[in-house]
Image 1: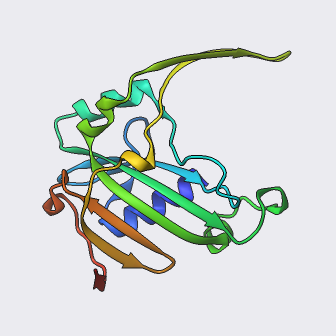
Image 2: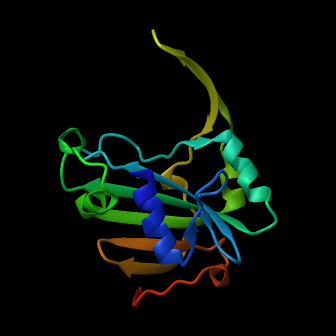
Length: 168
């Protein structure tokens, strides 16, 4: 699903998906790292994203950088989905909500060292966990098919080619 979300956000912002390493979306005037989380249908858990700490370096490439933090709901339970086709997966997205936030907003979250081990592998990583409840205020909300995109007050909207019909 990450690539499906990157395509969606790229279309909304007028940016290209980066096929290599670095930020997910690239454009002439900015770069964007995209993070999505599937909403719990029962609403039992707080909404947060997982950011790998090394991704914080993506904001140091000479262009203004932003985060696209999104939530989504699916038409079918994950365990029933049997396709990897991007178009088919896109059709399963019932609803999306996206917040475009300034790069430095992520600094408020301290890095957390995480490690684990299974019978087949061992890992160690550093993550940050931004929370939906702490997102900056929206300046502009744009409606699109099956969703909303919020441009927060710490974003320079001129860095994007937003071509959408409705603004709230």
